[in-house]
Image (cartoon, rainbow over all chains, first blue to last red; front, top):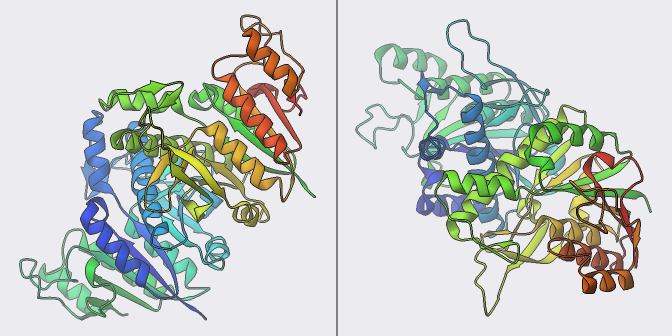
Length: 256
Length: 256
């Protein structure tokens, strides 16, 4: 099978012009077939504030009212996605922005939760890897926004890490997939105040131990759970690294 | 050559939930290969107002400051485009939303005008009909937002009628194209206060005469100029009709 790099960028990187430019320079240099997944939560929160739409988070997840869905549709599907696409095109990367509704490539169910109504939030149900492949075969680089749909006319807000993990799993049937989660830190840190305390390799056992001892916590937990799910579903390797080191073989490698 | 319908919907239709639903029901019923182009100016103006961004129009064209470009990127590329795409998917139409930057299908130059600085407004330079065809061949229905790009990392605001005309011209090399402009009126009206005064056919001579006598004026003039340009470039026919009559063989047919 051919190899493919699926890279997820989130956090501050994609929302600050300077770091975005540096990141896209690096992303453009990655050889071979590739897919980019982006977040945009900070921009959504800022835009919601400007529009007087209240942001409510529960366990790091955004409660998505109908009004907030409009905000994230504008920000993720429009502002962030198109800004990334247009800048990749200027670097000779033939990018194409997609939500899950575009080409119907990622279907989700509206989250059902007895305790919390998350609103228009999607849990991924089906990913059409062949549709993505039909683009990739034409040397197109899909740029995936963190939005899915329910097939019934509703977009659904979906965590970008989840989008990356699910897309990687679907593509793992068609490619040797390396899934890269990159953000502002150099990798999974042993001490969150020490940027150089990167843990080079984490397996499932290590993970359970680190969570128990509190070394790994907060938003890193679902990120790593996604990574293990992806590996169990056939993804070749998962790397967590700093955005400006994606071409440097550094960061934390996750194995089963 | 196979036939293809390229339909442009604008004005109130696409921005009001009820009329949008009716329109998409009708659009889904159009047989054969098709492309949809949408506007969204009213939504952009409303969103700009909510965000405190001033809207400035000159000759019906929006002056597009950097801030206004963000608004139209969000509204055209995100809110309106994805809303149309997700609702088409729920009707079994395999829609894919595109700006000119996506797949680099439509390049433009930033408008140069000695008298007025239009800001980030694009004049179309190059349309890649083959890229659109590669999608259409897979039974995908491209949904085109009124945004182009300059190949240097900038999105450009571009009139939706222009997008429709330019896409139709490029596709006319590959398909027998019927270009349909649909909006809230039944066609080109002899008397703008009489909805039933539709002019069934207009040729170039009629057009010049109608403009001179003031029967055709305002926003209808560039719309018809686009139509004649398209016909001269090989588009088979251009129809201007009411949105809810697109399957009824009514409206005004434009011929050379």
